Length: 164
Image (cartoon, rainbow, N blue to C red):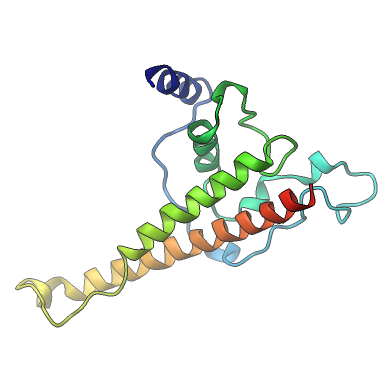
């Protein structure tokens, strides 16, 4: 109800979490696996599981998008640790839910950048068609890179959740 949206709005303002987000470009991060599985022993004998959970596991996904979805999807937004790295103690089920939501959203967005049927071209196509195809192609690559990062994050977190 309105109480829930009021709490969410307050959380967004208190924690300076934007509600509009821009996807980040792929660059070198595309297809990169999370550096160290959260809670694994690969980080060294002296490192704790919480220290091994870090924000690098999200790849190119915008960190504020994860934080925003935590507020929107949590049963009690005021009880969520918004600064905790994805997969941290107590955040794992919510983070899996957030990664799935990002995957769903980006899959829908990707469909809107599918190649156009050039058989029925509008009158302006000869003048602007090449630029439009170039733009749509770049947006397709951007969304696809972020979708890949979201899928990788979700799979990584689901493995951790199953092991917990």
